[in-house]
Length: 159
Image (cartoon, rainbow, N blue to C red):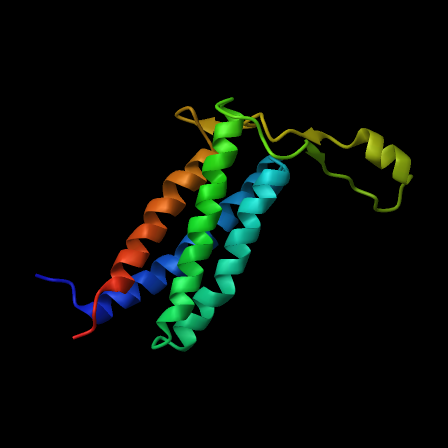
Protein backbone atom coordinates (compact mmCIF):
# COMPACT_ATOMS: atom_id res chain seq x y z
CA UNK A 1 0.00 0.00 0.00
CA UNK A 2 1.46 3.34 -1.06
CA UNK A 3 1.95 6.14 1.40
CA UNK A 4 -0.43 9.01 0.67
CA UNK A 5 1.17 12.43 0.24
CA UNK A 6 -0.73 13.92 3.18
CA UNK A 7 0.50 11.02 5.36
CA UNK A 8 4.05 11.81 4.22
CA UNK A 9 3.63 15.41 5.37
CA UNK A 10 2.32 14.23 8.73
CA UNK A 11 5.24 11.86 9.19
CA UNK A 12 7.66 14.62 8.17
CA UNK A 13 6.11 16.88 10.84
CA UNK A 14 6.48 14.06 13.40
CA UNK A 15 10.17 13.73 12.49
CA UNK A 16 10.63 17.51 12.59
CA UNK A 17 9.27 17.67 16.13
CA UNK A 18 10.28 14.30 17.55
CA UNK A 19 13.97 14.32 16.65
CA UNK A 20 14.87 17.64 18.34
CA UNK A 21 12.74 16.83 21.39
CA UNK A 22 14.35 13.40 21.78
CA UNK A 23 17.92 14.56 21.15
CA UNK A 24 17.69 17.64 23.35
CA UNK A 25 16.00 15.57 26.04
CA UNK A 26 18.82 13.06 25.87
CA UNK A 27 21.40 15.83 25.96
CA UNK A 28 19.91 17.35 29.09
CA UNK A 29 19.51 13.98 30.82
CA UNK A 30 23.18 13.30 30.01
CA UNK A 31 24.18 16.70 31.33
CA UNK A 32 22.12 16.96 34.50
CA UNK A 33 21.62 13.28 35.23
CA UNK A 34 25.08 11.94 34.45
CA UNK A 35 27.35 15.00 34.57
CA UNK A 36 28.31 14.94 30.87
CA UNK A 37 28.69 18.68 30.37
CA UNK A 38 28.65 20.02 26.80
CA UNK A 39 31.67 21.45 25.05
CA UNK A 40 31.41 24.35 22.62
CA UNK A 41 30.73 22.09 19.62
CA UNK A 42 28.01 20.28 21.58
CA UNK A 43 26.32 23.64 22.06
CA UNK A 44 26.47 24.28 18.31
CA UNK A 45 24.52 21.06 17.77
CA UNK A 46 21.98 22.10 20.39
CA UNK A 47 21.57 25.55 18.85
CA UNK A 48 20.55 23.97 15.52
CA UNK A 49 17.99 21.79 17.32
CA UNK A 50 16.72 24.75 19.33
CA UNK A 51 16.20 26.55 16.03
CA UNK A 52 14.28 23.60 14.59
CA UNK A 53 11.82 23.35 17.49
CA UNK A 54 9.71 26.49 16.96
CA UNK A 55 9.35 25.75 13.25
CA UNK A 56 8.31 22.17 14.04
CA UNK A 57 5.74 23.35 16.58
CA UNK A 58 4.35 25.94 14.18
CA UNK A 59 4.10 23.26 11.48
CA UNK A 60 1.60 21.42 13.69
CA UNK A 61 -0.42 24.60 14.21
CA UNK A 62 -0.45 25.29 10.48
CA UNK A 63 0.04 21.94 8.67
CA UNK A 64 -0.53 23.47 5.24
CA UNK A 65 2.65 25.56 5.61
CA UNK A 66 5.15 22.95 4.41
CA UNK A 67 7.92 25.55 4.59
CA UNK A 68 7.77 25.40 8.40
CA UNK A 69 8.45 21.67 8.37
CA UNK A 70 11.14 22.22 5.77
CA UNK A 71 12.91 24.79 7.98
CA UNK A 72 12.72 22.46 10.98
CA UNK A 73 14.18 19.59 8.95
CA UNK A 74 17.03 21.80 7.73
CA UNK A 75 17.76 22.71 11.36
CA UNK A 76 17.91 19.01 12.25
CA UNK A 77 20.15 18.34 9.25
CA UNK A 78 22.48 21.19 10.26
CA UNK A 79 22.68 19.87 13.83
CA UNK A 80 23.47 16.40 12.54
CA UNK A 81 26.18 17.65 10.20
CA UNK A 82 27.74 19.61 13.05
CA UNK A 83 27.58 16.38 15.05
CA UNK A 84 29.48 14.63 12.25
CA UNK A 85 32.11 17.36 12.29
CA UNK A 86 32.35 17.10 16.08
CA UNK A 87 32.62 13.29 15.98
CA UNK A 88 35.48 13.59 13.51
CA UNK A 89 37.26 15.93 15.91
CA UNK A 90 36.68 13.49 18.78
CA UNK A 91 38.05 10.57 16.76
CA UNK A 92 41.07 12.61 15.61
CA UNK A 93 40.11 12.50 11.93
CA UNK A 94 40.56 16.27 11.65
CA UNK A 95 41.28 19.25 13.85
CA UNK A 96 38.49 21.20 15.51
CA UNK A 97 37.54 24.79 14.82
CA UNK A 98 37.42 25.87 18.44
CA UNK A 99 39.29 25.83 21.72
CA UNK A 100 38.16 23.85 24.72
CA UNK A 101 35.46 25.36 26.89
CA UNK A 102 34.54 25.18 30.53
CA UNK A 103 31.47 25.53 32.72
CA UNK A 104 31.39 27.66 35.84
CA UNK A 105 28.99 28.02 38.73
CA UNK A 106 29.16 31.55 40.13
CA UNK A 107 26.21 31.25 42.51
CA UNK A 108 27.11 32.80 45.84
CA UNK A 109 30.85 32.18 45.82
CA UNK A 110 34.10 33.69 44.77
CA UNK A 111 34.14 34.12 40.98
CA UNK A 112 37.85 33.38 40.66
CA UNK A 113 37.56 30.15 42.68
CA UNK A 114 34.58 29.08 40.57
CA UNK A 115 36.52 29.68 37.35
CA UNK A 116 39.63 27.89 38.61
CA UNK A 117 37.62 24.91 39.93
CA UNK A 118 35.47 24.55 36.80
CA UNK A 119 35.99 21.40 34.75
CA UNK A 120 37.54 21.82 31.31
CA UNK A 121 35.26 20.31 28.67
CA UNK A 122 37.32 19.39 25.65
CA UNK A 123 35.81 19.21 22.17
CA UNK A 124 38.34 16.61 21.04
CA UNK A 125 37.55 14.04 23.73
CA UNK A 126 34.37 11.97 23.76
CA UNK A 127 33.23 11.84 27.40
CA UNK A 128 31.02 8.79 26.73
CA UNK A 129 30.51 6.25 23.96
CA UNK A 130 28.07 3.48 23.14
CA UNK A 131 29.42 0.77 20.82
CA UNK A 132 32.40 3.06 20.19
CA UNK A 133 30.21 5.91 18.95
CA UNK A 134 30.22 9.24 20.81
CA UNK A 135 27.14 11.35 21.53
CA UNK A 136 28.11 13.61 18.62
CA UNK A 137 28.37 10.54 16.40
CA UNK A 138 24.94 9.34 17.51
CA UNK A 139 23.55 12.79 16.78
CA UNK A 140 24.94 12.51 13.25
CA UNK A 141 23.63 8.98 12.77
CA UNK A 142 20.14 9.90 13.99
CA UNK A 143 19.70 13.45 12.68
CA UNK A 144 20.99 13.19 9.14
CA UNK A 145 18.96 10.13 8.04
CA UNK A 146 15.86 11.40 9.86
CA UNK A 147 16.12 14.85 8.24
CA UNK A 148 16.72 13.33 4.80
CA UNK A 149 13.73 11.01 5.25
CA UNK A 150 11.56 13.97 6.28
CA UNK A 151 12.75 15.98 3.27
CA UNK A 152 12.02 13.06 0.96
CA UNK A 153 8.51 12.74 2.41
CA UNK A 154 7.90 16.47 1.93
CA UNK A 155 8.87 16.21 -1.74
CA UNK A 156 5.92 13.97 -2.44
CA UNK A 157 3.20 15.75 -4.37
CA UNK A 158 -0.22 15.89 -2.80
CA UNK A 159 -2.72 14.29 -5.10
